[in-house]
Amino acid sequence: MSPKREIKAEIIAIGDELLYGQIIDTNSHWISQELDLIGVRVVRRTTVGDNRTDILSAFQQAEQRADIILMTGGLGPTNDDLTKPLLAEYFKCGTELVPEALEAVRTFFEKRGRELTLTNQMQAYLPTKCQYVPNEVGTAPGMWFEENGCVWMSMPGVPHEMKKLMTDFVLPKVKSLFELPTIFHRVIRTVGIGESWLADLIKNWEESLPSHIRLAYLPSLGQVRMRLTAFGDDLRTLQNEVDLQIETVKPLIDKYIYGYDQESLEEAIGRLLKQENKKIALAESCSGGYISHLITSIPGSSAYFQGAVVPYHNTFKNQILGVNEKVLEEFGAVSEQTIIEMAENIRTLFQADYGLASSGIAGPGGGWAEKPVGTVWIACAFEGRTVTKKLQLTQDRMLNIQLTGVALLNLFRTCILEKTE
Image (cartoon, rainbow, N blue to C red; front, side, top):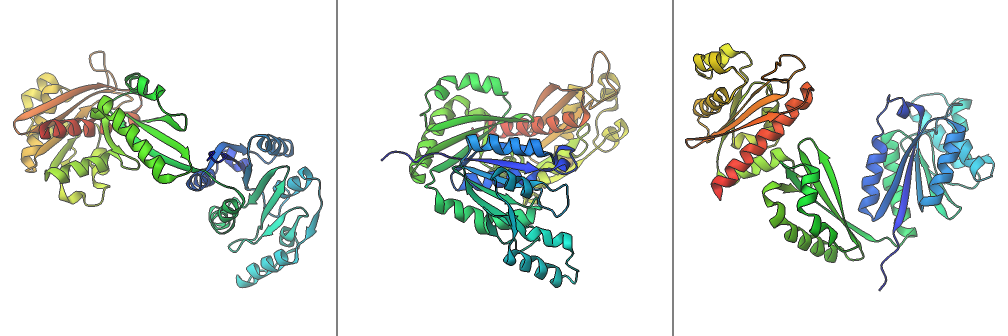
């Protein structure tokens, strides 16, 4: 049996406010996820302002590469809302009053005790070539077209209105019109290795992947996600094929893999601690409590998180944590000697199995030649042993804090795994 044809979609988000950065386009992200779940591949997401030429050009280009074109925004009753008249122009048709649409708008305003103005009544005038799609939670109707070999759907930009139309009408309609392939994703989450180094390690494996399984690298702060996407007809078959590929590549990069799919690094840390029935405590200086926030953002973290201290000033590194005053004077707060004492003493103070610590120069000021901005020491203390690591990060304060968090959690992860093994 021949594989089903890949169905492609393009999303066009319309509105100057999106280009100005006044509103974040969360609609396109949500629509992409929903289309992926039913086997439709989004090939382009376009943002265009309230400009006639640009919108018509976006329509023309989308028509050339997609089977399904979904639009959001530009459906209000004012002169700057251009989507509806431009769809009529593009499909060479007029507009006419749709009685059901007018009644829906009238009812919407009556329920809210508001007067239906002439301007609002204009929302009931729709292109003659469209199918009217009721908007049960707003005033701007949806418009469905089947023209020029594509299907088109225009929806309001208000997120809850768009989602209602997508869920109730668009997704079922698409599934009824197209014989959709199955798309299956699996994500391998790695930490402690850069994208290019990771690609070098798995080069031969990647080149041997079957043509219907694709690999994408999705790097983020200190981490790289490897997304395997398989296309076919049978979900179970695709799942088995992807699982087999993961088992093949694991021996090459196993020490960098901390989880799969949606699992975050802090969730993986919690899972390891629960498995081993161990507890941790933190002494955070340059990270300012950020790592404790990550750990405690996970439900059930009270089972393994003992507590934390943020001794930002050296006085409290000495008075609360018990870091030797001579060590602070001779080597400074940002040193291996200090970070060792911080990790070991927080472990003792909070009666934890693991003590984690961070100390560094987050920036943008405070650095000097020997210890420039971005110099950070981290440590993990456990069972009479302390593992340290020196980081040379960036000039950006928040980025340094976030990267320290990833590095320290990964240092702990490697320590607990090595001990377990």
